[in-house]
Image (cartoon, rainbow, N blue to C red; front, side, top):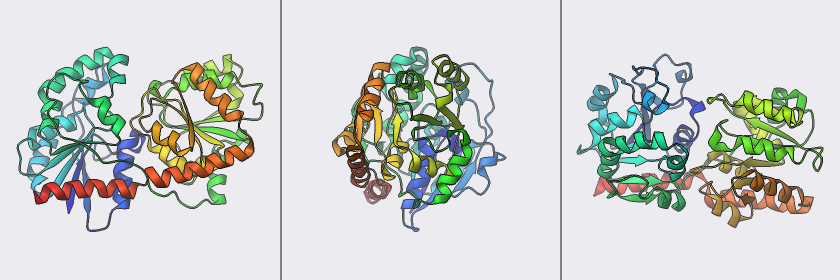
Length: 394
C-alpha cells in the first residue's frame, strides 16, 4: 500500500502532526510505503537525510502580512501541478491539518477524484481558537465555506485522535457538517532504553541545573500552552519547594521567552527556571528520564504527543482538563488534572508536592501502564491502515 501525506511543512519544530507521521511510519510494516508532499523550500536544511521521502513543492510566494493565517495561504505554484501529476501513484492520501495552502491545493485536486482521501484535523477545529482568536476565526469561517468544509465533506473520513476531539469539533463552523467522523487514536513509539548518555547530554545543556530535581515542560513556547500561568504558579512555591526547579524545553516561535524570563525574574524565580530551546535525541530523552514529573498547563491540546512520551518514560503527567486525553490520563492513575488557570496550576503543584515518595512511585508505575493501554502508536497506526484498506476494497 502506498500512502501520500499532505502537510504544510515537515519542519520538526512544527510540533505534533509531523512527529506523528514519522512515528506512525516507524510503527508500520515495510510493505506500507509513505511519502510526504509539502510546500517547504527544497533547500530547507531540515530536509537533508529526512527519514521519509519528501516532495518539497515550495517555496510559498506571497506578502508577509501581519495575520499569520493569511501568510499560510500564500501561493506555491509547483504544488497543485505536482499533486495532479502524481496523486494517481498512491492508493490513498491523508491531508494533515487545516488552514494553509496545502489544504487549499488538496481541495483543488482531491475532491471528486478517484483516489480516496482522508483528513486528519489534528485538533484544529477546537472551539478554544474561536473564543481566543475571534478575528482569525472569522477568516477561518470564510475559508471553511469555500475550501475546508468541502474538503472534509468530500473525504472518505475525517480522522480524530480521541472522542473528546471529535465532539468538540462539531458545529464550530457553519455549513458543510455532513462529513464522516472516525476516531482512530494516536500515540507514540516506545522510547529508547534509558542510558547514562541521555542524562549526560541533557545535563550538558543546562549545567546551571546541576543535580537539582526538576519538573519538565516540553512543548512549544506559546500562549496556548499556558507557559505564563506556569511561571506564575511555580513562583508561589519558591519557599514550599526550595529544592525543586523547573526546566522549560521547546522552540520560541511566538517570541514569548524574553517576556516570560522577565516575569520570572520579577517574581524572584528566574534562577530556578531553566530554558534550553528545542532538544532532540539523547538530550530530549535525558530530560524526560531525569524529570520528577512532566507538566503541561495547556489551554488547548488536541492530543499531546509529549504527554504520551512522558508516560512511556514512566513520568507522571500534571496537566489540565483542556488536554483532550485528560480522561485517559486521570483514569490510568498516571497523572493529576486541574483547570487551566493560575489557581488550577497552583493546586496541581500543591497536589504533587503533597505526595510522599511511595505515592509518587505508584503514579510513575501507573503512568507507564497508561501508556501501554492507551497511547502506543502501533495500535493507532494500524487503525488508520485498516480504515484505508476498508475504503479501498469498498
